[in-house]
Image 1 (cartoon, rainbow, N blue to C red):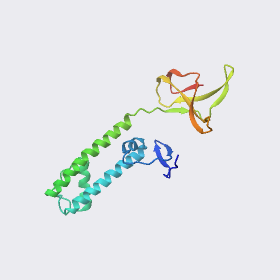
Image 2: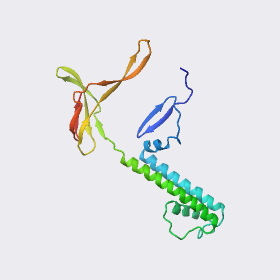
Image 3: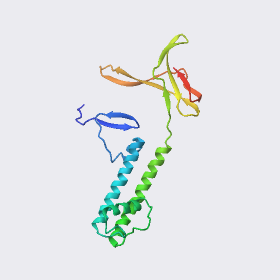
Image 4: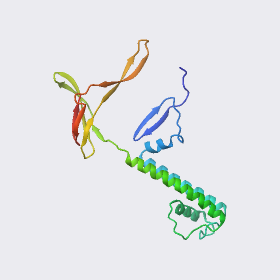
Length: 210
């Protein structure tokens, strides 16, 4: 197998960092996944940055046309920025408005972009809020003790949500190194047999043994 010269790609999923070897980061192609995987502070910072940058861009386009927006102190760039904010956020106080054909044309393009921006941002917000997230707390150290006459690995698990999870089920896997008959070393997932696979009610405090 030919070796890859690509640099390791680091991605963040929630608060955890993963390193992908031989992969290529495709930010724009995976924009939807990136938007859902990033943390909430980074998500809000990204949306705010796009919002501010877009308003500066349209303010500059208005400024190129001269005094195209009424009541902007002769086409002041700062006032044009605030007009763009009002237009992009669909507030529209009414004091500033397009006064020329050029202004109306740019405002129409900005309004179209506003529809897309609000729709995409709202969809991402709803998707992020609607995703079910489990919150389980694990004991810091597992314990090996005797149970039914044989050594048993026990792991303390608790539900962080203040509710009860019905028909809870669990599976435990470990990543073990193996070796093929040809002498190749590889890693594989091995499922461990649990003492209790299902739990009728899983409260905010509990323990499962295996």
